[in-house]
Image (cartoon, rainbow, N blue to C red; front, top):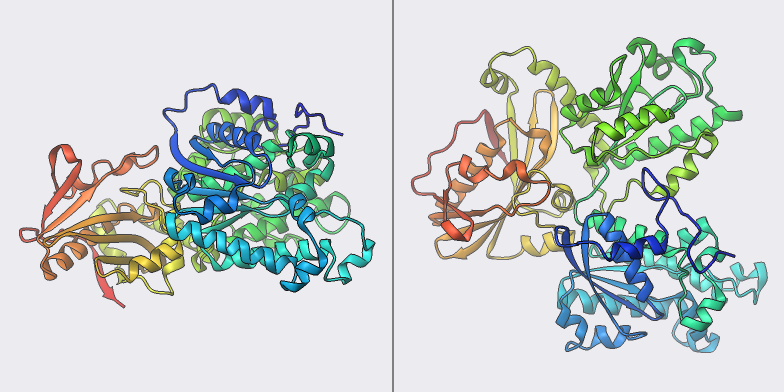
Amino acid sequence: MPSLGGEVYLRRSHETRMKTFSQLKKNLKNDFSRLQPLRVAVLGDTATQFLTQALRGTGFDDGFDLQIWEADFNQIERQVFDPASELYAFKPELVILFQSSHKLLGKYNKLETEKKGGLAKARLELIEELFTAVHSRLKAKVLYYNYPEIDDSVFGNYASKVESSFLFQLRKLNYELMLLAGRHSNLYLCDLSSIQNRVGKNTVFQPSIYLNTEMVLSLDVLPEVAARTLAVIGALQGKFKKCLILDLDNTLWGGVIGDDGIENIQLGSLGVGKAFSEFQGWIRKLIDRGIILCVCSKNTESVAKEPFEKHPDMVLRLKDISVFVANWENKADNIRHIQGILNIGFDSMVFLDDNPFERNIVRETIPGITVPELPEDPADYLEYLYAQNLFETISLSQEDTERTKLYQVEAERKEFQGKFTNEEEFLESLDMVSLVEPFTKFNTPRVAQLSQRSNQFNLRTARYTESDIESLSTSENVFPFAFGLQDKFGDHGMICVVILKKEAPDTLFIDTWLMSCRVLKRGMENFVLNTVANFAREKGYTTLKGEYLPTAKNDMVKDHYSGLGFQSDGASGRWILNTLTYENKKCAIRKETA
């Protein structure tokens, strides 16, 4: 049985094994003042004081100052349903609710739950009431821990056929919870059940500790729970992994293609070849989810591409790869080249390579990139990567499924651009058209996703969920714009969002201006300003007011407003543009309206 001291190690970071609880607790002595602050409320029906310490300690490692308010033991309903409670006085941005399986088991009564339509139904109704109360009063996001399974063995294996059994109801509750979270864009789940399935119940729950302290999560598992929680928090704050960069030999297949030849590399349904094929299958699913796949290999390009073109057991093909780099140059330099094409941050990239030397070179020379320590045995790749949870997300849009093609086309544009010495001629040759439309039920998922994921070109870094976007689109004092862009190479999709809010009878405030970095240096900034300035003037607003709020990632737009001709408003930090005297800026983009 794991010790109370938390000596069981669970993998989390890309360089080392996960910290123990005691190591996380030491983080609490560090200086949090330079980290991103976030007000978090934690409410539980069991003891949560060590959970909050693990969350705060993990937050430090992830760049967050989690300013946590913890409710008294078993006070969830009182805090949530009382408008004058300490919870609402604290005004958290995120509320974490933890209702444990053990407390649920203690309350389980067959007759009572049958009267209410079953344990799952009764508990689900309560959860929805809790969420509705919190969200309506705070507009906060809610993170709910689902339920690790407890088999009380009353029915044995027959429990799966008896709807009144506790195990049946618990599994039903977790299923219904997923459906509930799918209906509410501000409700998120942290999957404790999957954690227990992976690390074992004896690691998650220790009966003697529970009886003496009311702790249902052991100190050993708290670092894993905290890591999973911070993964959701990070995603909510725009921290995503967007790109997977792969080595080839002994990473994507067994053997060395240049030495062994296409007939002798290990792939297929037998032996170690099966491990590589299943690994490729997992990567295929990541691509379908919107992760950008790139190749960085020390190889002759034609030789490296041969398995993708000719091997019958390859799951991945060249059409799945956005940027393919195979040469004999330094891998760190090649990754920088890939980054230049994709125009995303290194902290959005994951690099997988079987060679410890190559991993170390990339890790040491490219700060921010994630380089997991792949196991020596390829059979262990997938289980190891599952535990890493590298690609957390909080949204999925139609554009995600088309992202590979978008970046492949962008690589074509880059190559085409090299034929021009004059940038203006290049932009004119692209024949660019921008579709400008308001927020609609069709584009709302993409608008929300852009607000959640855009970090670099984001003037105020406001994060919006789908329900937030729906509310904004129906407000009389809000004027939303969604911009698409296409050219002769293809469609970029929606790449820019601007939200104007009425601040005074003659003034519109630019609440949000964010843009995908895929379209930088295309003249889109000028086109957007032309569009919103003309709109403001036509509606009788003489002033556009902008604001830049600096973050660790949006330094690239610190001079955005001054560069576009706005005038500083002095100490307020706002930027002012007179729409009556504004003259349209030159750009090579034509406007199309929905």
